[in-house]
Image (tube, rainbow, N blue to C red; front, top):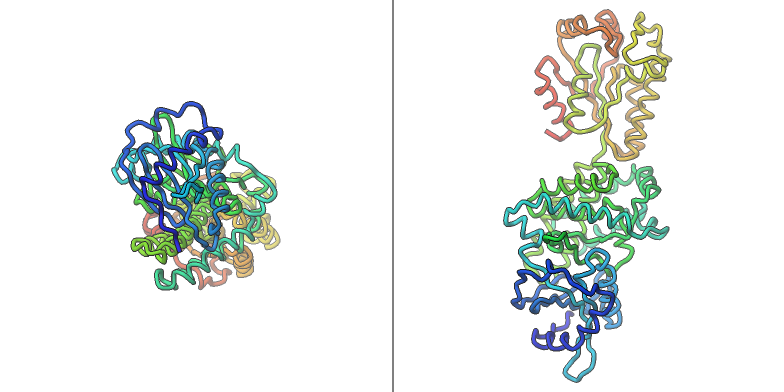
Length: 520
């Protein structure tokens, strides 16, 4: 049960008696004028799943609910007081001039009955969510925010315990905790089939990314972060952004990969109907942090954060908030969509010489941003010659013997495996005429929990012959029409591959390939 909140008049009187002492808790002597200009001083009350928030004049007072949830227990006053002090301490890392301190709530008998976080009231019309809803350009504000958060992450605490909280096993446990709540408390709110699919995709991604998570910890990506970046709690003021309401009640849940931290806001911007702002936010953070981030991991963490919000929305729905059921379904849909986009793929683009496979592979790379590994380049590199150097030979001779080809495919697939383990989809451009090489690729995809997508490029022989005859000197490929015909005669059928008719325009052929990738 939630205790009845105090009346506004009682709250204001009690706070006035104690706020002066609280302000002395390390707050700067001067509060920025940007915080108090144009503030709506009318009283109001808001509620979250953990707190009741009172707006009184140019101040805000936050009262913790005496409740127990799966992730926090606030039934005892001493625990609520500790959480209040912790909230002030942690949030002063980003907004020291907003958090005034902790004040005591005094009952009619003169005894302290609870505690409040005292804050400066922010101008509602500068709230990030309001700016988005009003259609105001936030480009510069988001860029300033990215600089602020990147610097915050650089200065953030790092430790062995934080590393452990960001490890792959810990991320798996966090997902399972969310999914347990969605199954238990969301059974009558969200679609259980979608919950099952979300769980499957999340675990599949994590299954193959051991190297990725280990390397990110080694790179210092695990920090004591904000943990709850939401557009409702960010204000874009003239003198810079203010970021409020970090996740104060769990050090473990606030221990995050930096990409996990920023993904929360990306998810929230998307929920608010601003996907372009979400993309800008992620890109601006990468620029400000000077640290490239794997796209698949960004999608994974956006999905995770959406799952967290879906869980919270289910809890709020059971607390009687009628709007939370719709929110829960919205968040779950975002999670599902981003997990589908996070799927890591090994795309095998094959075909005979002149079939257009290299053109299609390059065009797919331009659409997806995925790297292309080319067998012709790998073969020349193994031979110790420049890619443009001619090593033409009869079929099965020179650097085109079966032994050379086996070595080439081993090198190609070893490089592909390294990328897949790190969450990067990859396109491998090769003829793929040998069943053994295809099986090796499939085995690597299975080992890295990646989707294998086989595509075979085909065109009428008169088209492929004309392409080979027109191929300029210095081409990476040494094959001519004679080699192509020999390969056609000896190749084994590739029935499981989707056929890409390259006698069509490049755009039309790529459209078919993107459909096979589920990206059409």
